[in-house]
Image (cartoon, rainbow, N blue to C red; front, side):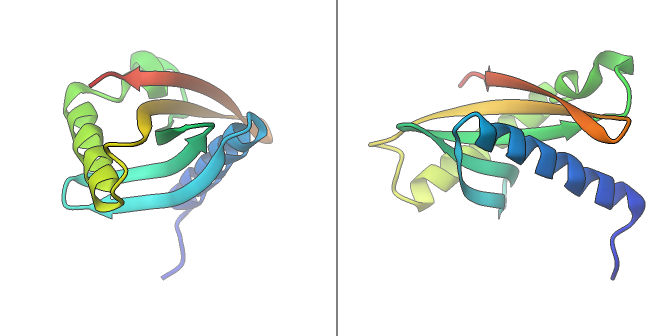
Amino acid sequence: MPKTTKQQTGQAGEDAALQHLQTAGLKLIDRNYHCRWGEIDLVMQDKDCIVFVEVRLRSSGAFGGAAASVDLRKQKKLQKTALHYLQKNRLSARQAARIDVVAVRPSRETFDVEWIQNAIQS
């Protein structure tokens, strides 16, 4: 089944976030990791730290924009999913980890990207 325009825009926004993070020196480990608790868009390596990245795309800044859309419920799901990933890959005891949010907003022919490091504290 072909992707809809909304799905294509979402994928392009996630690609823009990935490119932004890779330009900053992070390396991609996994993409769209799923488990029973939820999904993590990007799993990256930043030096000695595993970074779980939630990419949020919003076409406007109304209602607080993309970053504000990561409510408490979503934060808890991300924390559980990140912990599952660490345990499944036997990384929890020996690897530092954090959860970042990348807010993406379409602008003309590209995207504006705002990277919020360590956005969700556990």
